[in-house]
Image (cartoon, helix red, strand yellow):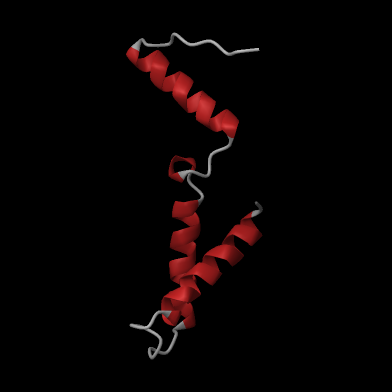
Length: 77
């Protein structure tokens, strides 16, 4: 996902805050929506939140195992 497409998704998600029953009567402030989108994009793009590639996950697991001395795994062919 490109930075532009991830920001577009974050903007859409931020705008949804004004579509909830509790908030639908509040006038959207575009600058606030954009600020929310920037925060959402920053947080949601972090691998530790589930957006990691398989290689990133394997690297993270390998590093954790090496740190605590439990690196004892093998891949299956």
